Length: 250
Image 1 (cartoon, rainbow, N blue to C red):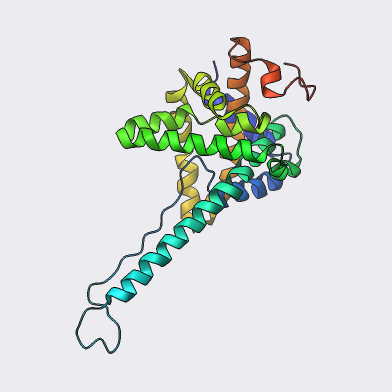
Image 2 (tube, rainbow, N blue to C red):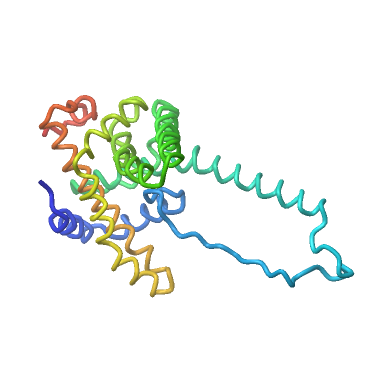
């Protein structure tokens, strides 16, 4: 059974060898929105007393202006979704591949872009979209089931990083099997980073970026442990995770 202290200490020790590469990869993952669905939301408020010069005391926004704003917001959302799906998903999975390999002292930033290979790209997009869709359905029920589903399918990007062609249903199934009985432990593991995040926020928010490599390295270490348990319990075989083809015999 894994412990938070063990995997965090291993991750920290590994980061000493190549922190800045891990930082750059973590920065890319953060930019494309791949930090486990969490992040910072910045909301802007509006003042009811504000208006446009020359409004003559009438409505601040005309129907035409409101329509333009709505269209602009919709276009912006579509652009963001397209970026997240077609660029963000492959880069996120590639970033997870980097951290999996880095936890085994292989530091190759080329892993970031390897999902853009035409042999992998569409399968990864399909699998990540399927995970997002299933999570969305669970959140439609209630917040708690949605959170549980998020933890159940947390290992999907890591599984895809090792075998992009494993199939969208199998990726979710294997992730659920890997995390069975571990969801609470993973949740507590996430909570253990709150202190670091608070320190990062106090450092003008920029400090949070320097915490991400630690979090990503720890999650990769966790995946390797859950992967080994899955192999030991015959939940999957080495070939299914492309381990035999890479010469990594466990």
